[in-house]
Image (tube, rainbow, N blue to C red):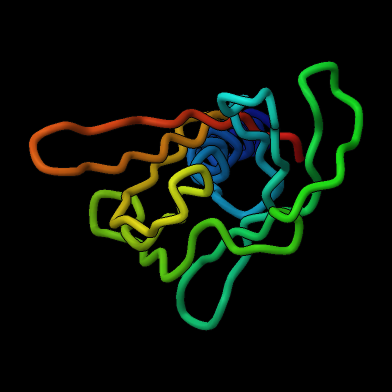
Length: 130
């Protein structure tokens, strides 16, 4: 009887902890290729009371490391957790050299970044590397 309760408790605790770790933003994310085929690896980490993302690596369309002025730059910052589990803050659009208000949401191993301008919205989907 005690073993059965222990197994049930362990299963319950494991089952509850899995969804909590699924929405962790911190880590390294890979962007989709831009119009030139450049893919960046971005580390999301706490910056004060918010989150920010800094480019760690850049790769070409074949997956080889590529020199880029984007390495070392913040691509999102001031991302504050919202009551619904998403984050809201600022996103740098490197190709347009402008910043925009954006939201982001983690769903499994996908990071959805949404930026809206006027009546249209664009969604970027990045994948988790680690």
